[in-house]
Length: 235
Image (cartoon, rainbow, N blue to C red; front, side, top):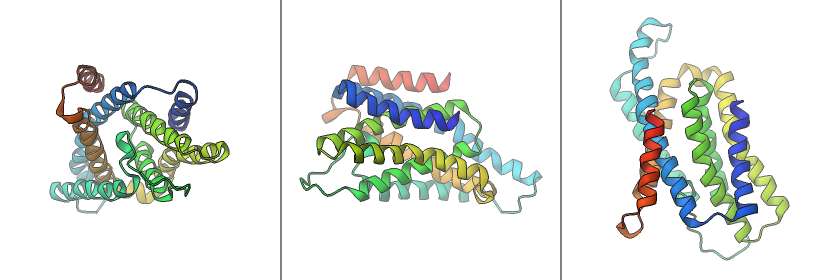
């Protein structure tokens, strides 16, 4: 079911663009909600679980030394990795794409970086049994899928190509989750891998919230969306 939810989130975003052409304010409010939800889930679930593993490892067969400073270092590494990915994705994870090239060349760097991002999102779902965290990923993927689909259609790529590449993008998170559940490497070093994912999520969610107000103007709908996102995550 996890895989179906992840794939459905992208399909829903494609349908949104194909049928309704969602308004800018709707996308921004959805982004604000997803950013607040993702940030709250990271702080309330992933961080405690990651640092909670420090004590549990003392009573398991895992002989790898794990300490708070090392976990913190990997969280910072996750932030750096996301910064690098965003230099290629042009901010699509935040709900916008800054590409002004009018050529018909396919934006491979943007697409590959988004696929790597989606792949990393699915990894914790391979060993973290948390339905609320699953919904955080699902909700986050909808506005990203809307932006990516809108970008393809705006630049008039062939429908076959749009379907193919959006299908490939939809499979990235399920593949990440599947491999994490089957390959021992992800499970043996899940402390460090989860820490990297935490860094990625912290960067994405905070940037989304920082960018939720244009020209530093207060937006009541976005503010309500942020409060709802945090409230739903905590509840």
